[in-house]
Image (cartoon, rainbow, N blue to C red; front, top):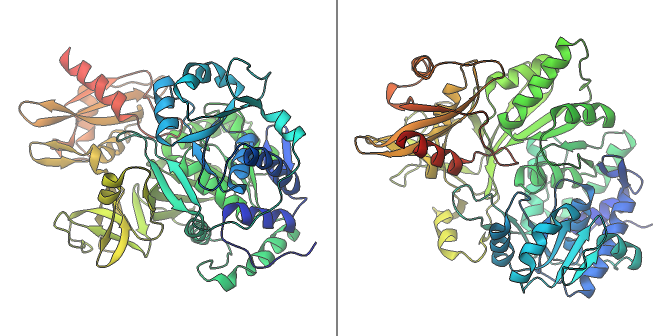
Length: 551
């Protein structure tokens, strides 16, 4: 087969090109199921043929109501083949949340796993815009109008012929809605593809500079060389594919260099299974979300070592995290088990901003990052914050700026704006710029607590509390208070078999924080609520804190 060296920058086209270059290499591993690049591409093409017949075309929205599995990836590839827009769906959503998301996104087709049939039956009549429901697994539910079997679609459709795609085709990811209703963040495939290769370069991979069209031809040589040397990435994505960390840093970047994506087809974090899967598959990359994933993994590594049954994670070259604080002491604990590169990325659905890299030879402080060249920090007065000034500022990036939020021009104008003639994304993260030019992340401005005129960032207080050996997890919120305006309240859980009195924990924390930042009250719970991607559930914490204070 003659391989075309020149092609458009569109994720579906890039992956088609890779399937021709390395057809027999693995593209997806999910439990016992394995798909080569050739099988992956052909299966997606059959689904794409069906979607085409159902009227899916450029920028048609298609929901993916699925947990981590190979069908998620195959369906997404199929949607992109017809230039549709995959819509990520939080599988924990209840009926009202599902109706909001499918309605807000204007979804016309939805893929769903059979285990969510009951939820679909509760909402499908409220969503007249969704004309097609595609059920994965089980016997097709005849109660749902317009329902089709995923397996029958694959067996009864020929592969769609390949097409030339538009680089301005929309790619969209819905935010987690931690600071409001979920919003669709819009990119176009051309700019987004360039950014994915830029992200790979920042992690140390050899990649062509896709900003310059003539470099596309170099991708062929790089992938073939990696295949011949058995050096293609095998990436285990431990966090949900429905969130940016899993899909961007794990899914897209892995596939854009011809690697294989490894998923565990079940809901929830299972540290034992993740560590066993690393050994079984020879995974060399692992994608997690901060301490929410790293702490349970470290506990399991420690337990294996104590039982003289250590896990074999020697194949791992890099562990990648984003979205949630990954503390220095947890990183150090992992490095004691294996010398692996720890890549901690600061970013969000609205763009990447900074990173830090740790190893046995190089340690970094918690929440301290080296900023990307295209990042600025703006003070409240609109001026660029100078290094070492001690002035907090809003972090903005011009590296991967979305087109905007879907159907929300007001929020788009607030978040994506020009500074000195250049367009930046300001997702809402505040930071200090240190003397060496690095930044220390303070947290999301929308969560900032204003107590007696002092600005207090929850993440800073949470990290100080977690320095205590008894504390497993903690969230910090502000609760309305007549004296202070807001007062700092923590909701915390203990490590197994441990505990500490509230007063003692507050006194211990004062060794690390100014007194005004230390929580006035601490509510202890069995488990701190977090989203499937490890992100903080501040709404839950705030409601619990209010009840606790008012008792």
